[in-house]
Length: 496
Ligand code: TXE
Image 1 (cartoon, protein in one colour):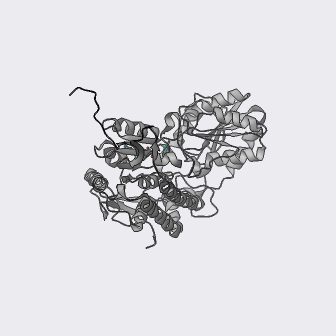
Image 2: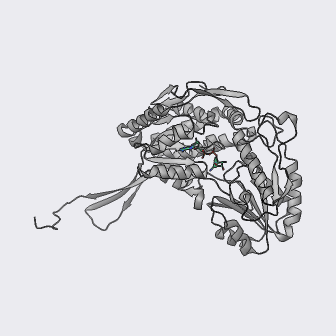
Image 3: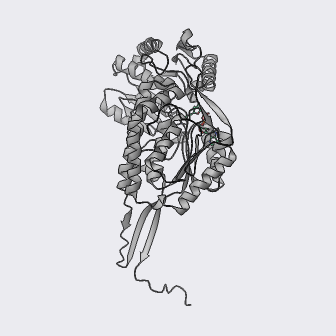
């Protein structure tokens, strides 16, 4: 049945049944005006234990891990069809939950649909391989097998999209899972689980628990019966998850954000550079792990570009994500707004020059939302917190360079390494700089695009493992070697 409206209670999904949790119920609020969008159930520790047990049983007793890949792929394709059917409603709920514009939410649902299709196609082609060991009586096969029970823990900025990058390859590979969305934006994850159920996912294969990190996320990462944790979120949480996983030696894949350089050489047309600088930095109010938050500009273009960016940033229309006139919605929460205000205060205290923004909007229509004006700082230095740390909000810092080597050194001077871009009309230079950047994704004369077939992930403290592409499927597989001796003879090693 098509989805109508935000999801209703009961909202946990355990062992194929919708159930309320022992953690009570909470309201989910719209970051635009604080209104209640939905009321949902919260899991308690006992619900986490039940969900892991259901996933364990479904993995150990099947049939999902041994279901032919063509059937698993068919289920993913059915999910894609249901996403197409429910696109408008899911996009609307994503906007109510996150505050992002409806235009962006619609793109997210299209991207999610493409991800399900991509992994359906890829799973269909999974063949393993034969290794020729040069012995006529031996068959040596390497076969991909699922890892087991996977905990999929997701953040609030791209709730549905991030979940699809995990759950589609996880299921394609034959695993079972427990999904734990961000407590801040859980609604479209609940909707997606409804679609997975409608598409016919067997009992216990997909489980959903809702709640915060300490109560619901942490026990998942410590549980003996969870074989793998895939996590996208903040650096500190990722570090805690890696530590928690050590006891049971779980497989861990983490994507922990970035502090991404956007390098602009002076031969880039001013309009193009300014347009893409603000798109890179302020899309979704900068709450994007790959946001181009560090603009690094060649001297000759610096002053003119900063002035043009400020002119454009001042004109960005903030508003209700459901209003087609809005170009940017609010920040997701009061906590995120407070964090941004703190970064702005620290930048000013450390001597950065405020070029524009640096405050909440005056418009009384926005007073109930978590809005913050797009903010640009120039004359920053590399040791400032605002340059080193991920702010995850509408703050752009601008640094300048004279030589190509200097640009590269600045762009790589970060503990993170998720994404970056280089803008220049000189194609040879573009490729030299792109090769030198230690970042998981590098764009040349572009910013933000990604495709399901190309890997996504970080170097350094941006994380380990990859999502999307063939590697995004391999994360959820063990590669098992089966050696078959068709004519065994005594080893003759010991005399016996
Ligand atoms: O993320 P958390 P928060 C960055 C961004 C942001 C900061 C904090 O800089 O300002 O992180 O955001 C669950 N064990 N990113 O606090 O806490 C939590 O419930 C297991 C970058 O919202 O990392 C949620 O489901 N799980 C980022 C998820 O982890 C735990 C996207 C993410 O929340 C847990 C979002 C624990 N101990 C924020 N503690 C990106 N990489 O794109 C929390 N969680």
